[in-house]
Length: 243
Image: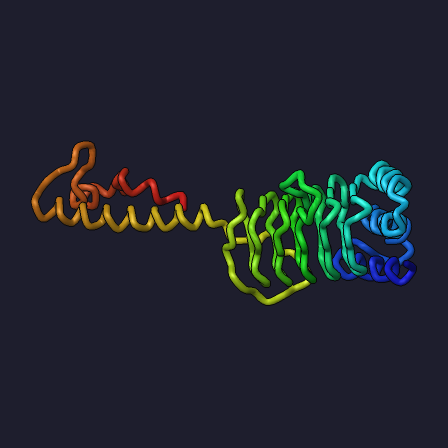
């Protein structure tokens, strides 16, 4: 148990640049406190002291803001950053090197007493307020974007964002930190593609109108715009300008 505590402290020092010393982490990091108390509760759970284990986990929730069912299997070297609002269900498995930010839920999707919570493989990073639901596998080195809702298996090294979560990057180099600013935005990428196609169609339409000497209603001819130096832009092209 002490070895697990030391590995959790080392994980906090490695993954949080705000951490200065081991003593600071031991005294002031609720994620480390939550994991330490969970290991005691998990030991009681395995010894069939179920009520005592649940009471200890309830006290853990009151003290740290992190709710971990005593049946959950959490490896050494996991880092729960800030921790407030984190919920980890009974049959969840979290392997070493995982980083869990505040508000994360590892929840179930069935009322049956079976494996119903996620399995996080080593070095998974889960962003703030993400929900991972059901007995699904999150592959090694995967990262889950903040606010995502994941309900399907995620391959190793993939990046998932959105509601419901979609894999937007199949593989990546495994790194320790979650670069929040570098997460792709699939909605913006689709809108940008539509805007580019719109611009191309406007160009073709304008060329055809010029060839046929057709003036679209409300739009001045391009040569008149240029000659007057007004710099007006065809309103049909403005839609793509924001992208």
